[in-house]
Structures are given as C-alpha cells and as structure tokens.
Amino acid sequence: MSDHPSGHEGSASEGSASEGSGAEGLGSAQAHEAPAGAGSVQPRFPDPGLPPHRHRMTDIDPRAARRAERQVTTLFLLSVLGTLLFMVGYFAVQLTSLGAVGLSTRLLGGGLGLSLFAIGIGAVHWAKTLMSDKEIVEERHPARSDEQDRAAAAAIIAQGNAESGFGRRKMIRNSLATALGALGLPAIVSLRDMGPLPGTSLDHTAWKKGIRLVTDPTGQPIKPEDVPVGGIVHVLPEGVTDLDQRAKAASIVIRLEPEQALASVPADRRDWVYAGIVCYSLICTHVGCPVGLYEQQSHHLLCPCHQSTFDVLNHCKVIFGPAARSLPQLAITVNSDGYLVAQHDYTEPVGPSFWERS
Image (cartoon, rainbow, N blue to C red; front, side, top):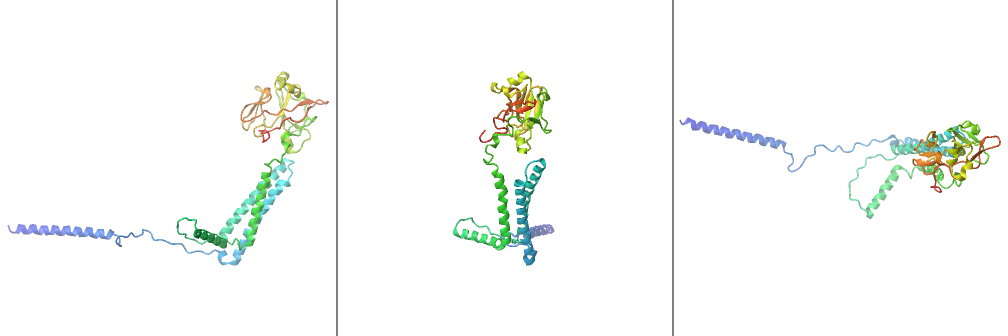
C-alpha cells in the first residue's frame, strides 16, 4: 500500500522533469533563432562595394590617348565631308534626267546620313576612350537653389569639363564645332525652299499658244482622229525637257460626244473644246498625284492616291474625296497641219492649293 504513493510521486517528478526538458529544448530553439545582437537586425546580404577600377589603355598610355583623339577628330571631319556631299547633290547636280534625279537623291541621303553617323560615332568613341569612366557615388540631398548649391553645380560642370578634356583637347573641340556648324547648312538649304522663293512660277506652266500636244512618253504629236470617242491620252507640251516643267504641264486629253463636251464646260469656254475633245490638268488638286484612272461609262476621273473623283461631264468638278478644287482646263484647238495645239497657258495654277490659293 505504501509503495503506490511513492510510485506516483516518482511519476510526477519524472513528468515535471520531462516538461522541464521540453521547456529547456524550446528555449534552446528560440535562443538559436533569435538574433545575436539584442534589438538589432543583421543584414541578409553583405554590401559588395564598388568593383576595383580598371584603367583603360588611354588612361595609362599617352600615345593611345593621342591616337584616340586623332580617331575622334577624323570622324568629326568625316561628318564635314558628308555635309559637303549633301551640298554637292543639292546644288551641283542638274535634274535633267531620271539618272540625275537618282544621283542627287543618293548624294543627299548618303551625305546627310554620313554627316549624322560620323558625329554620333565620334561622340561615342570620345566618351568611351577619353572621358572619365570612374564610378561616382552621389549622396542624396534636398534640392535647393541657394548659393551653395549653385556653387556646387558650377564645380561639377568645371569638373566635367576637366575630365572630358573639352577645353584642353582643342583639336577635338574645334573639329566638333566645325562638324556641328556645317550640319546646320542642310537644314538652312532645305527650309529655304519652303519660303516664298517660287514667286509666280506656280501660276504658270510650259504651255503657250501654238505648242503641239504630244503623247507621254513617246512624244508623238496627235490629231483629233487619233483620239477615239471615250479614249484618253496623256499629253505634254512639245519640246519641253525640263523635268519640273514637264511635271507641272502634264495633262490629259479625253474625247466625248460633241454634245456632251460642249455641255460639260461653261458657256464662255466652249471654244476651248475641239471636236468633242477636252483637255485637263493631270495633277490632282489635293496633293499632286496623277489623276490617271478614267471610267468611260460614268465619265469619272479618279485619283488613285486618296480617291478624289472628278466629273468630266461637269467641268471636272470634285464629286468625292479630299480634293477642294476642280481640275484646271487647258484651251485647245488645231493648227494648220491638223495637230492639236494649246490656245494659251492654263488660266489658273495647277496642282495642290498653296498659301495664295487655299
């Protein structure tokens, strides 16, 4: 009987000991997970810092620096050469043939592309080889506009000037200034054409009294019987070789029934029609595309670029699309040899509207 309490006490003691051991084990685990420093958080990753600076060849070898300087200068001078090619293509090449137009286009595009490319590559090569490439850490600070900040900004600019060598490397500085200065010439030349320089040249074409109508591109003069009813012929003034003049004077001849042709024009222009043949400008009054599509059944002229549609039976007035004006009409007749000729030039400007005709 007396052995049982002792056994219970022993069990209780063992249980207490076990609980104590569990508490100690939990405490040990918590102690293992707790940070080493009381109340502080240790960084998960150490700060690697900046890598050691690797000097370039131009930083340690003066000859390499001079060689890089000459390379940058050569690139800037190559830009000047590209600008000169642009100027040659604009001024020296006369646009008298399609080959000349192609040559001028290649000189303009290639020259301007070379000029911009050489300046860009020269600037990148300058920065990569001669300007300072050291890693700099700048501490954040409030942005202010007081004297101290302005002085600091001036010091930074002075430091950048010193590190880039802009003030010290005169050959690079002068060649860059020359390249950038020359690069402004193409802009001046191109913008110059957008001013009032054309004068009254847009008001007139190469058509004059008595000039024969010849087919484009064969250059054959035509007689009224060469154009069948419902037919259409592209024509130019005879003897005109200048591309600009040919482009402005390009016209279209259409033959209608004589009654339709007379009814399609105002009463004061009926003598501009000959044997049912009417002649209008080929240049769309929207943006200058060739109006070369003719619907014989509906007597409509269509511009393929923006779908402007002109009614031949109503003095080529616009019936659809963005064009704002009718196609100008050219007065025609026949000469003593029976060939179609112009009575005079167009009485209004051909092509798109401009400032004085909007």
